[in-house]
Structures are given as structure tokens and as C-alpha cells.
Image 1 (spheres, rainbow, N blue to C red):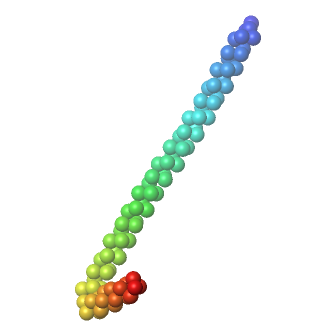
Image 2 (cartoon, rainbow, N blue to C red):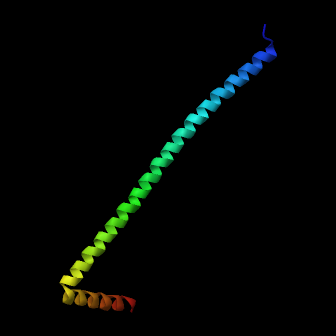
Image 3 (cartoon, rainbow, N blue to C red):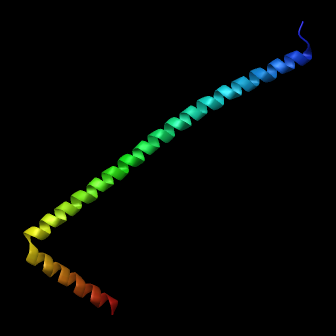
Amino acid sequence: MATVDEKAKDSIQEGADAVDDKIMAVAEKASDVTRRARGAAIQTVDDGREAIENALACGKAVVRSNPIATVAIVATLAYLCGRMKR
């Protein structure tokens, strides 16, 4: 027959095992969420870089196809910036 002391030890062990199982399950879920968040962040950075590269390529094409208009626009912007400083 089990004594009260042995029953208490068994109960403590069962409780500790149950808590350990729950902690492991939560840790696995947190690890999965972290993995997905890291993947989403990397994808967002890659998408942003591609968007900037595309915008620069389009800007270069516009400047090369319209050099006189580009110089006029830059001169106008420089003039307006100079006026704003006064």
C-alpha cells in the first residue's frame, strides 16, 4: 500500500510532467511562429528591393528617352528648392 508521501511524490511528478508537456507544445508553436515571421520579413525585404530596382530602371529609361525634359525638371526643382530656403 502506497503511503501518503509516495502519493504526494507521484502527484508532483505527474503534475511536473504535464507542465513540461505543455511548455514543450507552446515552445514548438512559438518556434513555428518565429520561423514564419522571419520568412515573411525576408520576403518583404526582397519585394521592396525589387520594387526599388524596378523604379530606378524606369527612371533611367525616362531620363535616357527625354534628356532635355529631365534637365528642365531638375533645373525647376533646384530653383524651387532655392526659393524655399529664402
